Image (cartoon, rainbow, N blue to C red; front, top):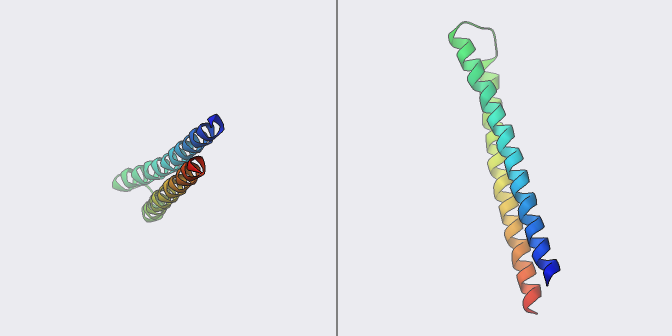
Length: 86
């Protein structure tokens, strides 16, 4: 019984850490895109379009992975709950 609770807590912790990691990657991508936008306004030679496309791709990937992780966590919780009820 305690083992199942530990497994759920472990899965929740991993899900939170992975989600936070994707959020950090998305934030860093947007940081670079914003820096490039500012550099473009002040006539710098950074690739604004490339940075923006990169930031969008990373953000979409982070959202998709977060949803997949949350779905997998929900299924694991349901499986553990069903096993506990047997």
